[in-house]
Structures are given as structure tokens and as C-alpha cells.
Image (cartoon, rainbow, N blue to C red):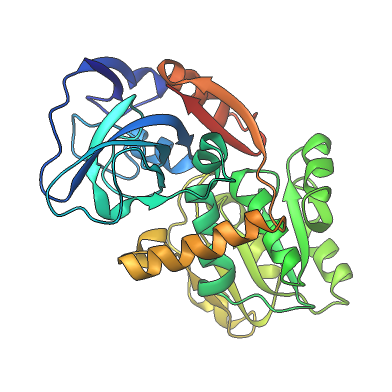
Length: 323
């Protein structure tokens, strides 16, 4: 007998239930994994609430680190006893153990602990595709990054800094401002500041070539106004609600702007891309360019409380659930 977090209906954190389950043995192409740490991500709240619908009843979560217990027929790239982590795949990482498709698993370098791995896989791969794929950040550029003291923000700011970019972060409190300044940001603005004016001052009136915005609805126009002509808004989250009804003329009157709404699955949808992204991420962590901050941890059984803290924006850095 093992335990998992399950939801049978969409709603607030209270719909997350601590449930007993029986696990069988892995089938062809599958692996049984004991979790040592589970990642907590804002996208989990979208799935719990129904903003991103999933079939119910369901487990929750797509990120964890642990040890392979047993493997099914045809699995060759991992073996029992291997330390592994993953950031994609079926819902269900909020569990003590699980059976899942082996193709999403990658081996962990010895230097990376389970908690660090569970804190960085999804957020780190997100940072990788944002900075290296969706828009290729160049040395000397000024870029704007919202939620710079969050899980993705702290990783992305350090990584962009290592690439030679000047990162302007946006955060909600003075405490988070100091954290962002210590983790790769050249300048940090508060969300109550006149963001557009401050960005224009820092860039000598030009604006930035790219804005990374996980906030969504509340920051859309501000983000557009911070871009230079032909700049790119990368909207990769909905913390304030989804962006709806963007008038394309708003892009034209600001000098031919671009907008994209990417997702990780488009960048790691085969084994080759997954391994390439992980290799780059692990290298950044192992060489010290990116230091992972585990801001807080929660018992796996207290996942509902963890969601409340996350949605209230009281968390800093990455968060993990501990089985």
C-alpha cells in the first residue's frame, strides 16, 4: 500500500485528497519509482482548478526525483537503483511511489540532490526553452522578467546573467527584491512601480527586445509597452488570469510587436530534445552559473496547504513536497 494526492473534482486546494492506492508492477516501457522529493509548480494549481482541464479522477503533478525500483520490458536507459528525475509525463507525481512511462526519466548526476532535482527540473527546463529556444538571449541585451524571485524567475535570471544579459526583474515585495538582486538581476522593480518608465530609463528610451511574463492578464499592456519595435512578449503563465481578447492592432501601433504563448511540451516532445535540455540545465547547475534555491518544503500529505501558500504568493524560490 502506498499513498498519493488525488482529486475527483476541480476547485480550490480543499479538493486535494490523501488517498491509499495499490501499485502493480510496471508493464512494457514503464518504470516503478519511489519518490524522494516532488516538485510544486504553479501549473499544478491551473490543473487543480480546471483552468487546464484533466480527466477526473486524477493524480496531480508532473515533476519528481527518486529511485527506480523495477522496470518493465524494453526499458534500457534506466535500471533498478538508478537515481532519476522527470518534469513531464502523466499526472501523478504527488505520490510516494508511482508507475510511469520510462521515456520521461533522466538519470541524475551524483552532485544533484533529490530536493534540488525536484526543485529545478520543470522550472529549469522552462528557463532553458525561454532563454535558448523561444528567444535566444544575447550578451549585452536588457531583458524584462516578471516574478523574478519565483521558482522559474530565480533560475532564469541567473542563467540569463551567465549568458551576458542584463536582467530587469519585477517582484511584489522589498524582500523579494533583495532576493532577485542576489540571483542574477541587474535591476529590480516592484510591481507597484511605473514599470514602463523605469524600463525605458534603464534602456535609454529604447525598451527591451523580450519580456518574459508569467503573470498574464494584469500585466499584458504594461509588458507590450516595455518592448522596443519588433520586440517579443513571451507570455508563459496566468498567475493573474489568462489573457483573452488581445486586439492585434495593439501590436501594430507599438511598432510591429510579436507575442507567443509557449509550453514546455513543444520543446521536449522527444527523447533527443529532453536530453539536450537536461544536459544544458545540469551543466549550468554543476558549473555554478545557476544555484537552485529551495525556499520552502511541505509534507506531501499537506499539498493543499502548499497550494494555498503558492497561490497567495507567499513562497520564494522553488518549493518541494516531501513524501
